[in-house]
Image (tube, rainbow, N blue to C red; front, side):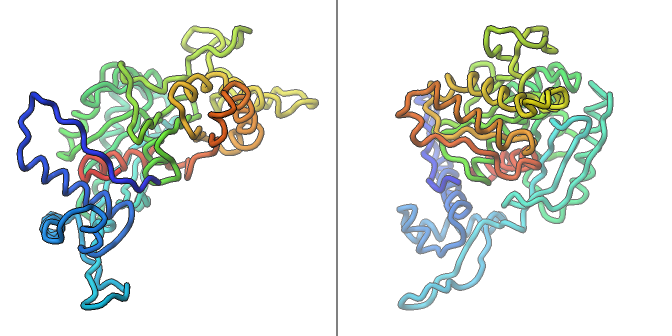
Length: 378
């Protein structure tokens, strides 16, 4: 997890800079430092942030008044004079809701604390439901977990399949039968809480970056019913011109044909690498090469990812999905293919690994979005 303090955004010259803007930024810096490093005294915070003790004490007081920070008692660090009082983010006194709409035939939601620990879970089966019927089940599920929360809620984060445009509108999610669904507004109006909606792979990469082991430059490939990717470059999530960065599932890999994809094209990456297609290929594999589908899937994935890794100079490729499919043969084939197709110099520090806690990665990443917006921590 990155422990660097984020840089301030560049200010538009057309916008007036008000004193309140700088104060909000400083409050965010204090929370970011406490969240990343852990509890510390006001004096240590001032030294770390390069602020005066008076300024930091004033900021901490405001955060405590809002319930975003708490005092934990005297520091055990031995120093001359009176020991300082430790302060920290209110990790257990605030909660967030994460929603995962990407699982096959089931909707999932959870109440999480600020460290990403799941406190309460709930599910709804959707079977062949689509369109408005799925929206209704999402709202029913969200109301259930809101009722199970045991502390004030900061908001609701939703990870959904498909392409999510500005304002939390799901432009298209074929698996759910959705087109131009204003999901953020629907859930916000029904609950009265702040709501944040992103693609499920984007939620997953946020979880790995903030709560897992992710560095500042990585691509996370989420493999389940489909194949999607989330990108972090320079510590920032990449969205793209059409809010579709990481949508690699329907990239054609190779010129040697392949199966016909549900999108109508032939040889899409998803036909080789998605979990259902991998399971079918393994069942049909011959006894003389039972692992060949996994090796070929890793190679095809490497073909698709090599230009991405090279163009963005990424240091990590992370796989999230069923470990029995992605670990071992597939991961090794992916690693070998990337190293064969990239300059040797760029592969020296390249890491190919499985995601941290993949089963709940979308739930946890959706909750991270809430922390980022409401507390400024990431």
